[in-house]
Length: 83
Image (spheres, rainbow, N blue to C red):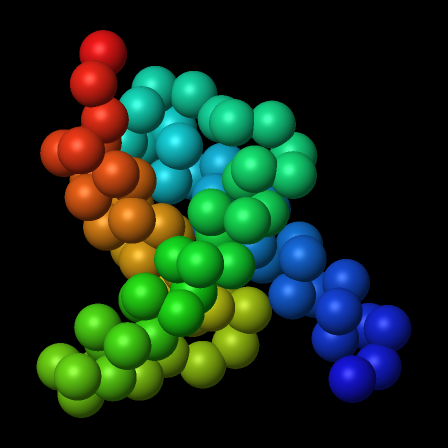
């Protein structure tokens, strides 16, 4: 994996995690947590979108899929989290 790919992967994860945090919780979680949430969301979103048969290309598509997956992740975590 080249350094550009790693930087893009982390950038998409950070943006997706931040967007999902804004949509689901009302705020971001800090840079590192946003990246982690976005990366896990990319796997979840890729699985869900793949199961439905939807494909998205490019960086915008990756951000959308990752954000949806991260939103699903935050929703499920919110079901188990006590306030």
